Length: 406
Image 1 (cartoon, rainbow, N blue to C red):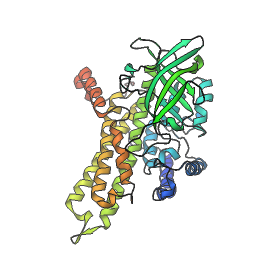
Image 2: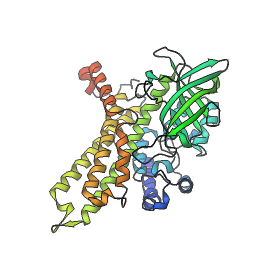
Image 3: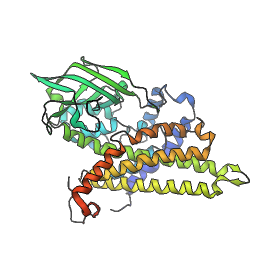
Image 4: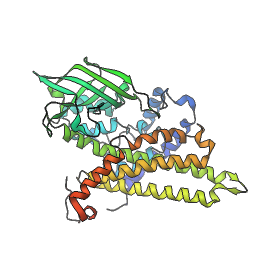
C-alpha cells in the first residue's frame, strides 16, 4: 500500500489537531468540565459539538449523502488518531463508540426508512445509541452464538425476553440495536432489531460501576420482559444477526484502535515534556539512558500499531473483511496504550499518579482496551485459526491484480 495520504485528508487532520489543541486539551485541566462519571459535562459537550460542526469537522466517517465527509477507513485512521489526543475528542466530533459503529452499520445495511428514522437523528447529534449484544453467563459475550435473549415472532411483532449487560452508553441512549435469538439454527438463529428507549417491556436494571472513567450513559445491565418490536425494525433480515455483527464489529474494533493510538501518543507527549524539564542528581530525566530506552520502545510500539491499523483500514477500503488484520491491530494497540500510560506515569512519578495530568485517567481507561470487543486471548485464537487454515500463506502479500477476499 501507499502510505501517503491525500491533501484532503491531511487538511482534515491538521484542522482536527488544531481544534483539539485549542479547544479540548485546556478543558481537561478544569475540574468543572467533567460530569460525575469523569467524562465531559453534557452541556459543555454540546457547546464543543457546535464548534466542531461549525468548522466542518462533524461525523467525518460517513458518506457525504449521509452527512459525513466520506473519508474511507484509511482517512478515518488518520483523523481519529488526531481526535483522541484529547480524552474528550471523539465524542465532540461525533466519532465515539458506540454511536460510531452503529451509524456505520445502519449506513451500510439499513433500509431507506431505517436510515431516516434511526440513523439520521444520531448523525445530527440529537440522540445517542447503544448496541445490545453481550449477556451474563451462560449467554453470549465474545461468542455471539451463545446469545440467550429470545425474540419470538407473534403476528407482525417480535416479543423479546432476556438480559444483557455491559451495554455501553445505554443510560443515555434513545436508539438501540438489539441482538436476539429468533431460532436455534447455529448459523441463522440470530436477528438484529431496532427499538426506542420509550417502548415498554424493558428496563435498565443497573448502571454497572467500573474501574475507569465512563462513556456517557455508562455500562448497563438491561432486562427485557415482553418488549415488542415491529418486523420493519429488523436490520438486514431475520436470521442475519451474525452477518450484522461481522459488518459492525470488525470496523468498530479498528476504530477503537485508531482512537487509542491518539491516547498513547498523548501519554508519550506528557512524558517527554516532563522529562525535558525535570532535573535530578544534576541531570535532566531526558538525558538519562533509562528514560530514552523507555520512550524509544514506546515510539516503536505505537508505530507498529499505526502500521497494523493502516493495513487493516486499507484492506477494508478495498472490500475485504480484514479479520486477521483487525485482530492483530486490536492486540497490539490495546497493549501499547496500557504500556504508554504506565510508562508515562512512571516517568512522571507522583505527578503521574495524581490528577494533575490526565495520565491516571488514561491508565484506568486503558485497562478495558484489552477486554472490549474481544479479549486479547480471543483475537490470538482467531489468528491461530487463520494460521492453521492458511499455513505459510498467512504471510503472503496481495498481488496488484488480486481482488479482496471477503
